[in-house]
Length: 360
Image (cartoon, rainbow, N blue to C red):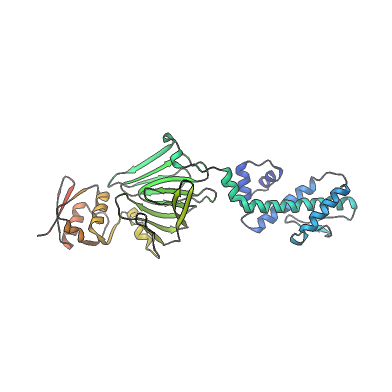
């Protein structure tokens, strides 16, 4: 934080964004507050009127310093006025004594006011900066990116956050982020690497009954419309899973720590999975398709998205089959040959349509 910006804040010349930055900096640790208070004291001292205080002013100043002296490093009986920028020597003349006493009184009040600012800065910022929902942004100022079956994508959002999209995924985001949040919409599967902004959280809306709120983190989310369940896995940072009760009211249904994952099935309570292998959750980004005792109906969905094929099931008994296998760059024919080899499933392929049947 530069001294010039702090002086702008002290003199009332700072812009709203600069005021927020100063308050955020002051609240980070006590040393910042002490430095700011000392700089403010110095400014007050150097800008005091060059005249003796009246008896009424002296009485009021004395009452203020007496009230706060037990909680403050300032005292009219001290030989030096302590501040983080260096001591200011006080001579024993009545004129200087009155000036220092008044300066100390103002400084104490300023310290109390700054502490109150810090306490309420989140509320103040929220009040000053409105929340602008993605749905409220005009169509012409929004972008929608869709990846077809068999296609993956990547996009950098207006704030520099990065998003990798799996196949059959839709992402909607604005030209620029306005208001108190950064809202986007996802349907499908994506890996988010969100740029940190403590004053403006990112809210990821989904096509399921939950939202994801983050400040700066990396996570994978899967929310396909035709899947039985949705899943959010945290790689680093922290995230909140939120449900909106009604407009303007929300409830945090889960908080994730790194290597934790939540599985959500419709409106049921989310299921926490601890110490998950995040590399497997992100494997799709590396072109790796992993099945671990996966039901055949889920295998079919993934293969349709992965290879852009269509499946026809002639014998639904095959859906009782589970598959454990890893694929990287194999064609749909190679994958089906492997499935045929290790399961009781027969197949035929014609014009990108795969027909499944049970072996006789």
